[in-house]
Length: 81
Image 1 (spheres, rainbow, N blue to C red):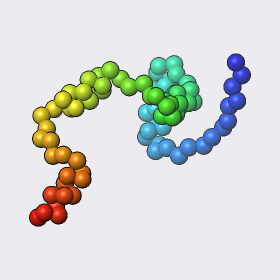
Image 2 (tube, rainbow, N blue to C red):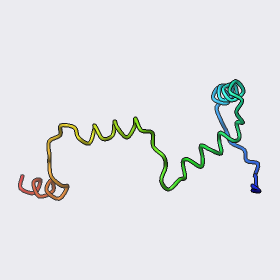
Image 3 (spheres, rainbow, N blue to C red):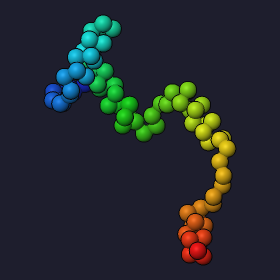
Image 4 (cartoon, rainbow, N blue to C red):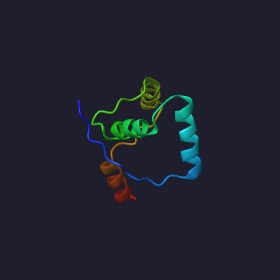
């Protein structure tokens, strides 16, 4: 498979670049490839979400909340006041 690569310039904080460069070097990773993977993950139509995040989200959804109705109900209530 042939990939068309482009050279792009990004502005990063020096400390961020230094830490990420060191991280990639220590782990044998290509910085360019990691940025490419990150960008692809951001633009996916159905991004893959970590399992632990989904569990936390479900717990929040099942939380103890008071049902206050819809925004329309709220607007009607405001008019009565």
